[in-house]
Image (cartoon, rainbow over all chains, first blue to last red; front, side):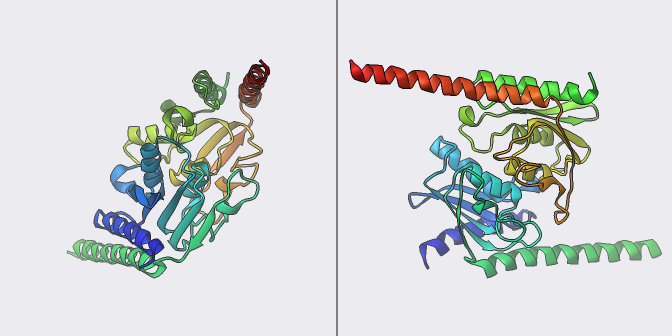
Length: 165
Length: 165
């Protein structure tokens, strides 16, 4: 396993943790000098916070660890393409390199809807590597949403049969 | 004073608080049912967090108050045009209406560089009102940066005269 795959695997394990909690499964880590100094997974529902995306949690932990808002010598690994908010947070924290797994065609701010990390007008640009463990990341997400749809179908059926009684 | 100006005045007072702490002076409030339920000012330096923009602080407080990540019946007032990260956070939190003071030509994500709050591809769109107390907001910022430049000039002069001794 390459170094990059190893870190993405840790992010994927964090995404799995989110799934177990009923959260959309996305995980992220911040790496500094070959060590993970920030971990995060999506906990929007459990924290009831619109800001609790995996990347935000990982960046927050890394900044606290380094006691600095500048994460200039760090790399971020995230299983899903960052949204607009998280892309902005990556620029704000001056992270020079981001690895992401699967694309997010509906909300991605790095490749899908925008290329925010490479905007020449901003005071910071980020190198982007995509596709590491992309299949695993995407399957974790599609499995999660499939399960939700099935549960919804089941509860709809149950309430319909309830109505007929 | 209109209702809108009153709330922006509270945001401006928060920006002044940031200035007193040596932070780039930006302030924000989240309003729900005619009450301020979230306040924030930029504290990137004092918190050493890349995420500590005024809007993020205010949104975080409001979500904690409502115990919900959905700020669907809230308005956000901020003295400066939101950056990309904060524009994304506004979309994530489903805030339907944003008022901002001055434009930020170098980093603004609402009017200057992007129009992120009105992107039809995203699952949430935001009504934008700009220009409330814009002159006051811009003057607070330009005064702050002028002061910094003067201090830098002075310390450069002092170190040069020190070198000559």
